[in-house]
Length: 554
Image 1 (cartoon, rainbow, N blue to C red):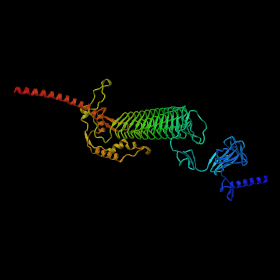
Image 2: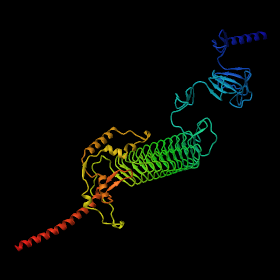
Image 3: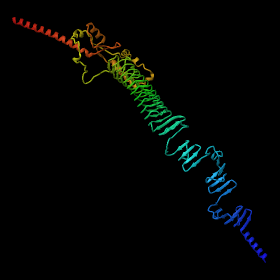
Image 4: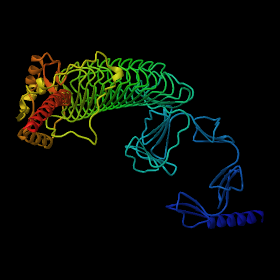
């Protein structure tokens, strides 16, 4: 009977098991008649006491898995993968991090972990993070073969930033730097050379390779390659341009704007140079102002000069207190002092003369060493020291609302003598009419030689001005003049032993007449005529009286 019961129970178990387990070519199905995998379980299961299979997942050490694989307690997988409460260890049984890998690894086909670093797209990383190919970090950082893009997915430069950037601390650009100075807000290097900084201690600002490279002095601004390159202890300098104030060491309060402006300055101070190579050679000169291409170019120690214009005061070396405004104005001046030249090429040919004044285009002197002269007007010429000239040879009229006054205070005169000849002088003068030969005047004044200056100092003269000048000269030569010949007047005066001040012969032998001086001998002549008239009148009166008496006696 027992055997029968056991047999029936066994038969029922096998029948029940057969109803739950289905074996097919696709696999073994538990709780399913259509297994899709080698082992396909439909429903909960427990394997070997502590492995539970449920609809929520596989539980190892837990009967209630909350994840597809839920492990409670330590575990080892495939010999070198360990799971404990600290994390997952690959190649280590004591992981210290959520994922702790000892040895090389590959993740998802193209991520490699090695002792040299992590490689993404490369199995041989050479850096801690070695990415071969494009990458994106977060939502706005992109790595591509063209560069790193921040807020741009298509970087065109090694670092391409689309938007604002804020930099905190010091900024170093370049392959290396030799030292760090505190309170340097901003610093740039190109290779091993300084290329700019903002110094919060000395209050210096520089930008450009070699600009303020010594970091010396304070309150200086240098912008441009090698601007203020040699500066040591000077203050309050501004250099803007390639090699501006390049040699300056201890000169202060200088302003140089333009390539190589004040290039040679060492200790000179309070100079202003604006323009390419303006005040280029200045070393210790002070208080000079040069505005224009190579203005005051050769000045070394001269002081207080003002040059405004292309090559104005170009050759001045030690001259001081000169003022030149206009291209090549006082251009050949070297050591002359206290000259004033206003106008293009005004007194351009003065070299060593001093205290000269020229106003007007090409107003000039006939020699390079005259002193105390005045030339006013285009092409006006002075021939000797202590001479003033107004206008050129084409001028046809000079006037004003009142007559010219000559200083004549008796308190300043001595050796006064009433010895001026009258009729004897006036009667011998030879009044004439004539036409001026302006070409002969140019030869006499050596005008062509005065214009003999280097081509490098010349600017082209507009043809329109040349035509206007030629027309004026032709009109002047046609005009009939009235006057005297100076040599004749001189000969007449000498024949009478009269030192007549109306005849002027300058240092180079050119004659001039002061027609106003003729008034004095004319007055004397009128006085002599008046005396003669009085005598004649007296004789007439006496003869008239005698005639009347004779008539009465008849």
